[in-house]
Length: 443
Image (tube, rainbow, N blue to C red; front, side, top):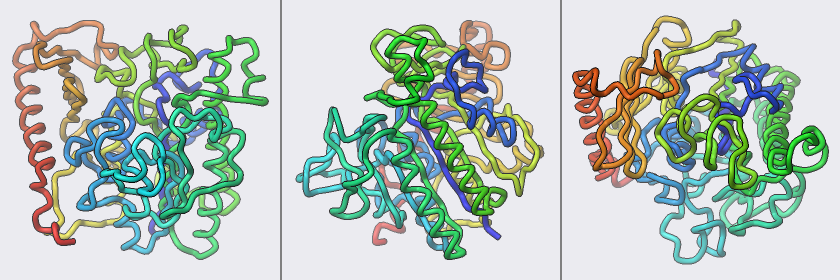
């Protein structure tokens, strides 16, 4: 029997923004429980240091530079890309998307978000990418009373020309979960497996919280009250989701994944006060934040709970990525794309890693964002902040916080990783030119 699959993701939650990763004040009891009961990935990477590109990697298994969503509010999911939802439907799954989409605009009719409305060239809603049931936004919404004080007026779209008008007050994570749970119940009632993508807006700005969540952090300044409050409110919804899976009798047979889309927003680092308002996220001890390819920008919380297959808790130190979700699910399903639809994938199946049969990653993880480039293997990482800058080298086993550039000491390692990075970038460029698509251009 094929498992149900849930992909949960937060927006701008740093590696350090969980209790289980050592945050001294922030309360995330349900994520902490997942880390104790399931699989905790200690080197889990978002495909990009900003949101839209990472989201695309989850549903395609491919690096964003292959399909043209290279930054936030850039490009859209192309019709030639194959999503996990499209394959799931072939296999008899129900599919649903809930929360932030950010992989294309959702309407051509009225202004919506940053890019939606008449004249948009980036229309690519989730219902055109394999999702049957939707409660989706183009952009991040305020994390409390989301229809108020919007910087870019947006709606929760449920289908072509249709959007929600009720139950839109209070905590946004609860609002999103209120739509995801009925979808799950309906699938269970119909005895059909499901894929649910639940992408919270928390804790992306506009950061707001309210009620008891603010009271929990009454000893903090206002900025931290709101930031911590909205993260704890999201965590509560993860607990609500897990309780629902238990009540429905499907917790054991459901793959429940959780991660963030990139590191924390704002300047600074660690758990200290961050200048610039309510974006008070923590990258823990790691260097860098959102938008940066140092570890703090791309190393994020990563969890999996799947009791039927992995009943014992475990910690994974092998580098893993959001690109691996697609490939892992294909392996679980025993699904192989037809020859005419094959194309390069940047993920690996994590099943051998989770089974303990693979102690190191079989191929490297490449990164590119704006002028930055990086590549990491099981030990070393090269990083370059711009075209006119030299490559830096870090030993992530000895120096995970990237405090010592050792490029001068190990030039051969730098050269090998640079050559691998060049080959990977050329492959991504070929994909971006459409060379993966010719045989399915008429689909």
